[in-house]
Length: 334
Image (tube, rainbow, N blue to C red; front, side, top):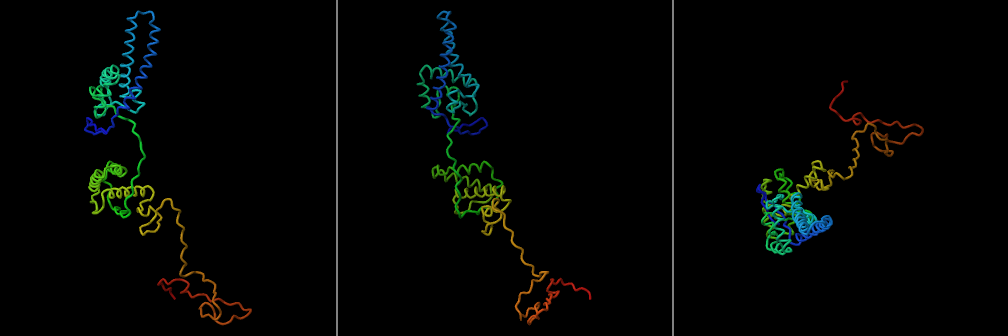
């Protein structure tokens, strides 16, 4: 990566194109230009057959300069640094400050390219590109330009590793409203790439990010907690809050993940089936008493003791008013 500083003092990290990709782009441009030159030359020879040799030579030289020098300069100017070969290889010519090139940049590159590419068969351009730390040829040095890669290989995106289990829910009370999005992005990029970093460099970066995050939240990093584990736990807390805001309707993180505050499964899961309503508890004082089911001889007040008289229906004894309704403390008048 090459760090370029723009006029607004913004550092840009660009990946300069190396010699193989640049050579392939130049080769494609030359093949296209030579093909067009041969076709145009044959057409002009057929059209100017009646002219003398000097006129034909002058026309051929003018066509050569136009197709192999003028057309590439015009194409790079109009396309802001992307010729046919560079578009095929994913390259672009930019200024030293990262901005798009103009006509003067393309003109200097094209004129010097005639010497270092066409006249020397590319030997001077290859040597200059190998010597330069950013792969620049002489035309780029004099024009103040740089060829960079536009299409970078995309690898598999790593997920953020989870924090240790003993840190789950420990930072539920942090105020994360003052943390900017840029810091969240930096923390996430570090967590996804920390296995690819040098251990010392990764530890220093984690310490710096943890200090910045602690300054934003107003709470210091707990003693004995590694910086990387602290970052992972805080990022998980933020993700849990975003998920609760979107699906959990303000329920705690443990309840959203399937457990309530007391450890039991709570109703906060948005995809859980609706809870089954519980049966209503029986009324302490029913308005209609149940049928008596006590055996004969029982001392229950609602069932008469002794054997029942055959042929005579038994008269049920109604419960007393006090047992039928609860006492309210109001005595009706006599």
